[in-house]
Image (cartoon, rainbow, N blue to C red; front, side, top):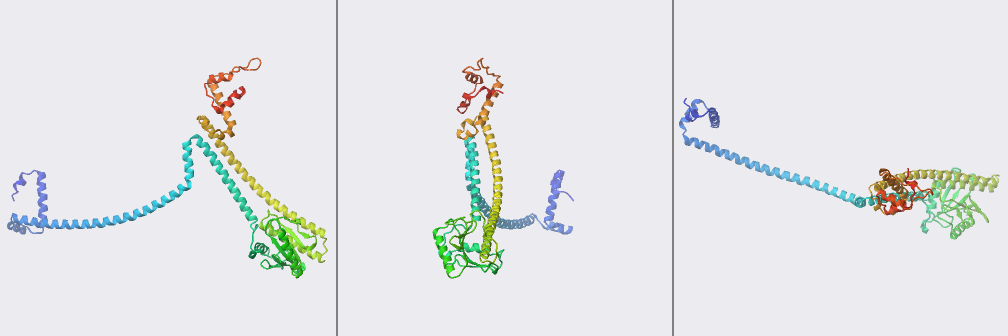
Amino acid sequence: MEYPQIYINSNEDTKKIIIQFGSAVFQLLNLNCLTMDEVIARFKSINNNDIDELYQVKIKNLEKTVATLKKDLKSSYETHKNELEGMRDHVKGIYINEINELREQKAMINDKNEKEIEDRINLYRMGANGKIEMADRIAEEKEKRIIALQDENANLTKYINGFIGERSLKDTEKGKYAEDVIKDIFSDCLPFDDEACWKTTARGAGSGDCIIIFSKAYHNLRLMVEMKMKGSITPEDHEQFESHYIDDFNNDKVDLAMMISYDYKNISNQGCCLVHKYRKDNDKVIYFALDKTGTPQEKKEIIIHELHRVCKEYIYNKGVVSIPLENNYVCQVEERLKDFKNREISIIKIIKNSKNQIKDFEKEKQTLEKSRNQLLKQLYDDGTIYKINHIYLNENESQLKQMFFHKIKKQMKDKNIVIPPPNKSGKRKPMWRDKLKEELCIDIEPYEKKWWDKFKVDEIMD
C-alpha cells in the first residue's frame, strides 16, 4: 500500500497528527464497524461530492444538537437565575428585617445612653476641666441615687409597717380597714380563748366596728370595739364613740366598750393610752392606743394581749377571781415593758444594718477621694491645674499646697540653691523670696501666690 505524498513528505510529528486525524474520520464515518471488503467497496463508489455531502449532513446534525443544547442551557440558566433572584430577595428581606431590628435596638440604646455619651464627648473636649466636672457629676449622681434608694426604702418600710394608714372613707366603707385588722386577729383562735367569736357591725348603725363575744371562762363578756385608723382622735370621733356605746348599753347589746387608736398613742382627754385606761366617770368604757412604729404583726399581738387583760379585769370585777387590781395593773405594765423591749431589739438590729451601710458608703467615699487626689496630681504635674475653676479645688487646697512646696524643694535641689541663713537678730533680708524666685526661674501662678507670699523657710527645708 502506497502512502500519500503529503504523508511521505511530513516529519514524524505531522505524521502522527495525520494518523490521529485519519483515525478520527475513520471512526466518524463508522468505517470501524465494517469489514475491509465493505470499506474498499464503499470507497470505490464514493467520490469527493459524496464525502462532502456526508460531512454537510454531519455538520447540520451537530449544529442542531448545539442549538438544542444552547436552548436547554439558556432555559436552565433562566430558571436557575430566577431561583437565585427569588432566594436573594428572600435573604435580602431577612437581612433588612434584622438590620431594621438592630437599628431600632441601637436607637433605643442611643436614646438610653445619650446623656452618658454626650458627657463623655464633652469630657474629651473639655480636657482636664471636663475630667474634674465629670468626676464631680458622677459622684453627685451616685449620691442622689443612694439618697433616692434610701428614701424609697424608708417609704416602703413605712408603707409596710403602717399599710392601713389614715384613710378618708365614705359612709359605705365605714370600718372596712378596721374589720380587716379584726379579721386578721381572729384568723386563728385567740390563744387565751379558743371559743371567742366576733361579729362585724361596721356596715350597720351603732355598735362600733365589731362586737367580740368571749366564752364562759370570761363570763360571756360582750365587748364592743371601735377602731380608729388615723392620727389624732377628734371631738367628732369621741361623740360618735359615745353615741355608739350609750345606745349599746341601753339596749343591752354589750357589757364593755373599747376605743382603739391604731396609729396614735395619745387619745384626747385620756393622754397616752399604750396601757389601756378606763373612763373616769364610766368604768365600762376603755381607751387603748398603739404607736406608729410597730409592724402589723406586732400590733396584732399587742391587741390580743390587751384583750386578754381586759377579760381578766372583767371577771375580777365580777368577783370570779380574787387577784388584786394593783397586781393586775403591774402585770399589764410588765407586759407592755416586754413589748417595748422587743421593739427596742428590733430597732437595734435596724440601726446595726444602717451602720453597715454607712461603712460601705464611707469606703466608697474614700475611693472617690483617692481617685480625685490622683486626678489632681496628674493635672498638677502636666500643668493644667491652673485652668480648673477654683471652686473644684478648695477641698484639696492642702494637697495642692504640699505639691507646690515639693516642686520648689525639687528645683532648689536640682539647681543646688541654698537660702542664705538669717542675720544675728534671726531675720532675713526683706527681698529673700524675690531673690529665690529669680534663682529658680519660675512663674508663680495666681493660685500659688497666697502660699508663696506667706510660706516660711521651714516649709521648703528637708
